[in-house]
Length: 233
Image 1: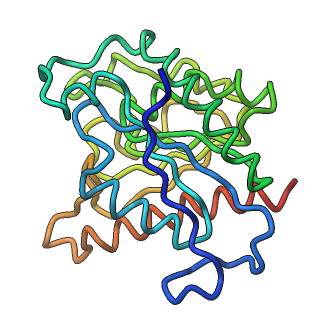
Image 2: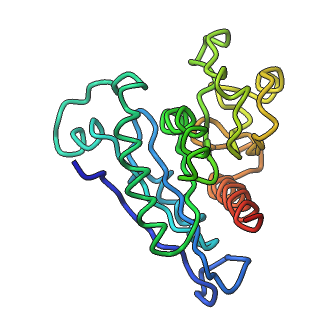
């Protein structure tokens, strides 16, 4: 089965909505993003974040796992399968995205929000060592289940060799700054904390931050990470 993609091309320099910093764009980087457990790739979160990233000169492929595609076509709203059973689908999506990136002569990065970020993190080192991807992007990473801070999902992140960035809300119940500071994560992982953000990066009104502003900050953090790695090649 062909992977289910929603591709949004990079906005080129000269586009009035573009915020791309490295003109001219001779090699467009590509980013494959997978969704969280219950939020489709067409959600307001993904639409806004995708717009922020493509405005900075990066093509985004939003990938949908089979169980979510069934939900959208009227199927049952059962919980997502076990994380390990999603990895073959993700591998297929990565290799399809790699072919699309090759057309632009660009590097490929993979990642996702919450569950999608966790799934992609499990294959990141293998794909990086094979030369398939150039980095991993975790957004609202689920360091532990809500209310279970001792049930960590960080073992593979301690020795991660793939260049990576995690963009996390400061109030995310799946992992807060004081908690994450004690995890001993790999030095290859950059952390970008979003002001007063929850798991969807939404701030409280009294914080003075806005959701649009937080998604812009998240898009900038992801894009800066990708372009910094592009420049190093």
